[in-house]
Image (cartoon, rainbow, N blue to C red; front, side, top):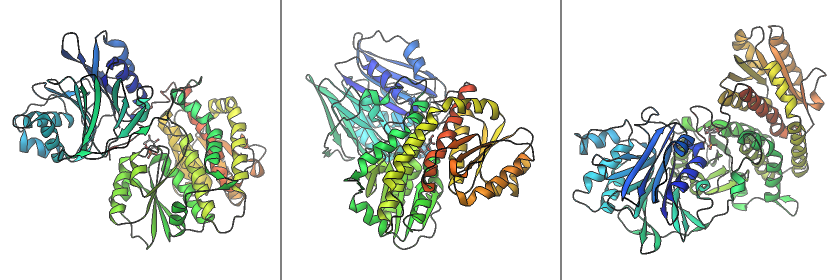
Length: 599
Ligand code: G6P
């Protein structure tokens, strides 16, 4: 949550910061700000306000000769999104300017112990950091004051700090929240995500937890050095920048979400190409051994990734014969269940940064259990910190509502379960290829789904019902619809509806039923009749071989077990078109962020 960008170099810093912040808006977009050094009159200028980066870009004057700046796009945790609470924040004398992503858990204690008389301007925890640094510089050098502050603060943070007395230096520090340093001869860019480094770095490195980095201009050179908390240099190996600008554009689509929905067949094909060697799915032996050795798998995830986890449970149990449980990360973090011997923990996360998952990972690692992360971001914290990680290869997902990363996760889970299964009762390669083709068929008919949405989906509320694997898709479908259209939606196990929730069914309420498995066809159809007789406006999504002539969306047959990869597509389109017709901000829905780095 919150995106930060900094730059020190030969180019115009404000251009790099503003374009970087636009790329990081998926991390939060309720307010934003920039602090830059005006080289001409040697002063610092700060612009900040409530609202999107667009406002920052268009409504302030950047006709300033500037080569050093820090910027921030915010997802509010402490205090409302308004101009005062927007970053950058200053120390009392305005010597230190700071942007922060994360949450300082002990800021109240620090205030009462060290700076009880300081008057704070904002409601944020960030201002405390700036004031502590300022306080400690009364007796220490700036480097030492920053290190001392870092040793006192508890919680998560990615920080960029400017000392206005040294306009050739940016200090950076991090714990739990991501922060990358992008290197190029003509300047150094610092950012929460690789996307903001595209075009400005040839190599990069992630700052390690509880270290700090000093980016400095010495002579004509830009130097970046990393130090630990006692000031000892920390070595790093720069990584090649391998992301290109085209990967993060809209590619002619009106919205990132629509582009990402349409990319899903190629995600399946890309995953196959990455994990097929000589026609066999091949996963690192370390990972397959880990899975095979597990007596029980514990999948930990949040949001959409958790829904992929439910499908994964089905795969591990039905394909690989390994008992599996799924947990909400924020629950598991502080309520760990009684574990069996030889467990394996699988963390599923699109971003690889979700703070709730990281807490679970730290707890589980302390118990010395094996850990595996499934993520779309190979450089992410969860990828680095788990014993093993496996990449989804969905490509950058920009829309806040996850679509292609979800199908990527489900596909990876099917491959993992398949490679460790002793009896292979179907050809996964063939079946996944069929899925990609079937996905294309429904994506091609998306205008038809738009018309169905106009006919069936009302603003009031909506229910998705299904059983078995379809129930998991219903959970994901409901989340998608509510998060971008704000229509109150529930995903229900079809048979459970009659135990209470059917009381909410009345004339015209939309109920979308999903049917992909023979074994549940008859029962789900009975549940459809129950809601129909109470006035529901029903829309059925089914696979061809279980379809009825009256079903509105009939999908090409794929192997039953892979049906979640296909049935989810029309539900994503239903969410997209509902939000479009309601004129919602589809790619950046209110109150949400894509990378949730606070607990
Ligand atoms: C946020 C996003 C969701 C996402 C969840 C988990 O809430 O808005 O779309 O599913 O985080 O994120 P992760 O990156 O761990 O998959």
